[in-house]
Amino acid sequence: MNKVCLILIDGLRDDTARAACSYLMSAVAEGGARIWTMRACLPTISAPLYETLHTGRAPTDHGLLDNEGLRPSSDPNVFSEVKAAGGLCGVVGHCYFQTLFGETPFEAFSHVEINDPNAAIAHGRYYSMDGYDADNSVQPAEIDLCAQAWSVADRYAPAYLLLHSSSCDTLGHVHTGLGRGYVRQAEKVDAALAQLIPRLIARGYLVLVTADHGMDEKGNHGGDAECVRHVPFLSFTDKLNAGPDEILNQRSVAPTILALLGVPRPRTMEFPSLS
Image (cartoon, rainbow, N blue to C red; front, side, top):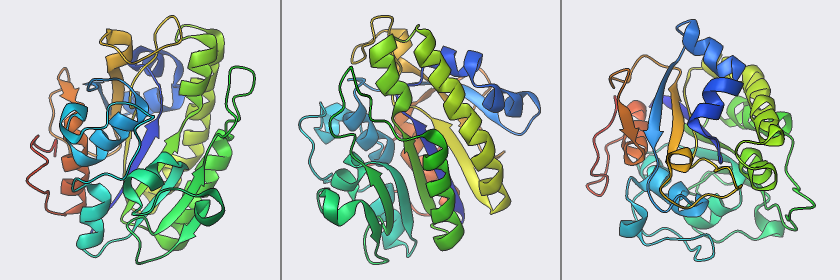
């Protein structure tokens, strides 16, 4: 089985990624990566799109339409299919992923760190952002998240590794999608990824980078505006076949991950793989 890492930068607009993420864009310019615009599904809300990214189903089909309705996913997904194929999965990210895909809902004192080869997510490192509000973003440092992801990759080499950063979404709500604080955070995420991605590639990972949704000029998301539906999709592998000007569909991410891993996709993943 191959190894794939998906890096999910929550709330990162496509135009902001192209203007502010100097490492990612230099990789594109130098031929080490390719970039496309990807169109997010509706509603452009985090938890529903986490499920879409991993099941290949639209929120109106999988049934999760807001963050408050969080519950374990009932659909075949990247984590369940990798486990069924005999592979291990790892996550460094928001605790929503444990509730959605980890077989048991997140509980801080039990799940802040998981090492269980029998679990759907064998190696989890979660943060909750409990207490988050406009005055206190309680966001983990990007370099800390990247270091944790590297630790999981280095020690356990999971076939599928997810790194999820919430900070662009968090500061976008505070500073808006056009504010300097939001753009600066995208730069900080990019700088941390500049230290992580080359390490992952050297260990044989096929690296993909995208976002769940963008952010509008009022610091919101959820609707159909281009600034919240258009997100970047980068591939640090030459195995994808999409045309350079093609606008990709978010429902293609899950089948693409499984195809890169060499794992059969379930029938519920109706969109074709990009590879």
